Image 1 (tube, rainbow, N blue to C red):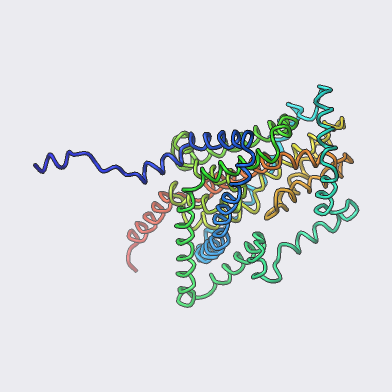
Image 2 (image 1 turned 90 degrees about the horizontal axis):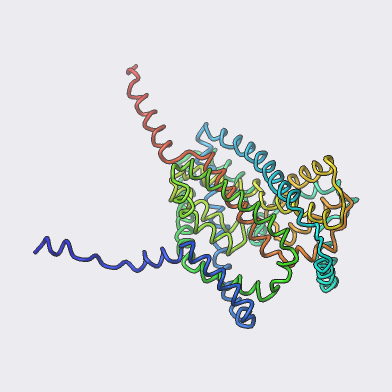
Length: 453
């Protein structure tokens, strides 16, 4: 009788089944397709349900700053006591150089090969001009408040440096100034690491508790991701329609291919570093891709990056918690792709030939300008393209309306590229849990092998 009971059918785990369905790539694709169809054929309904998605995004974003503050300070405190931590920071600097070079190279190559700005069809050029004129003064109204005048370029560096340091950390926390908060956390963590452990133990435990609570919250919120994706895409499609996507199809193709190149490369790096198959890595990273598509925010995706690398892929938690926020501020893959491909698109649109020195200027300026975009919104990032255009003396204001119309798609590509790059770079730098365990065991064996004095 006992054998019969043991061989009976197992109870159905509906939570596990629901999790697999909601996190399936097929579910994501189906929700995106359904959102596009809903926005095209039922625009009123799409606009009516859009506040639900905004409410969901607010839930996601409310845990970002507590997550960053607790994880960064706790990680810095732990790494200050580890003399080997300096080597990680040197590798981050090398990653910034490599990623910046690859971003410019990839997007520039696709732009020069595909030539998205050369529109040969006269009817398409007429429709393009009509769309720009239909936007009225939107390009002027949006572009100039965000961009510095060309003759004040010398003050740009000073203003950027001043914006990095918060004069009131509580105001920075309240306004969501991520870079300022990150700098404060780095300095505060360094200072806490110098305090004797008995004095800092209570704060360390409190930060650890906050971090774990935020992790639980993010795991709860992931259940609603597919539905929020459907609502956001439906609302965006209902607002802009498909005409801007058709007019900017060549440029979106360049951005999409550039994004896909970085995602494919990032998955390969993660697969090698985690010793998993490529397909298994894609399935493991699928929830992170959903978060990036839904939120279109690198900062809001950081808790999922940390959870992916530390919990699922078993990299060192302390190192991951330090490197992920730091590299999110420095590895600005998405903006570098935008500036390089966008400037080349405008130059091709106006028939402006670019020589080798001009291309080098575009690449270097785009890479440097991308480093200053941490914490900026998508429109502010987009408006800074005028700085690069100013160096080449090509018009930007009229084309700005085109980029605004496809901002949602471009912002999604930028977020996916940046998030996947941060995850891959962290996987390359951070030691795995297996390596950490082996190093501890090796140190213990060495101590045991030493003769007693």
